[in-house]
Length: 133
Image (cartoon, rainbow, N blue to C red):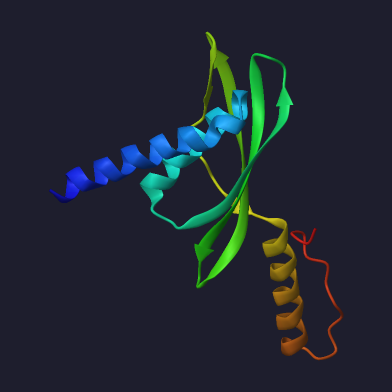
């Protein structure tokens, strides 16, 4: 019974995604569907998803996904780039999505590294962290 409800919930989420994608077309709409399917599987709360086509030659496209996910007790901005290709008249995107840290997380992480360096050695100078944007 529990499995049935999960399948119904997943189907409703996908249907809602298709309806919500109606203002998008092409690779962005396909990326939204791929992301929605992926999000159902990983079960992490998310909000404010945004899809932007970075490159599109008519046969292949790269779409950037920006989203806020609930992690460690707070909303964190993450992003990913996925590849999409046109098959017949429809766009299809990779289903394997790996979210990377967004710009807000990178600057916060660099500040944390600098704070730890100052705590460890008060005479230490501020360092430039490679993830700082």
